[in-house]
Length: 72
Image (tube, rainbow, N blue to C red; front, side, top):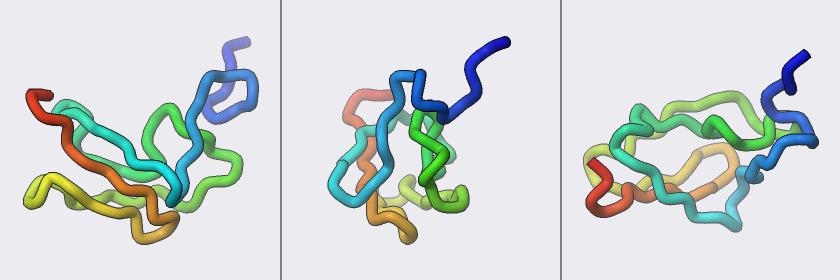
């Protein structure tokens, strides 16, 4: 049986306001929590409009996201 997404036995990152995450153009549309983040203590999935300014903040947890330069 494969590991479930968001379980503690995976190498995942927390989603919270104390982190700033770089995302690639290929990661868009951006949602929080992102794939690879813990799900057990997360908020509902929300899509975040980052394309216009290159930066955005999650309205639930306050995590900050920015588009990485040269990430086409």
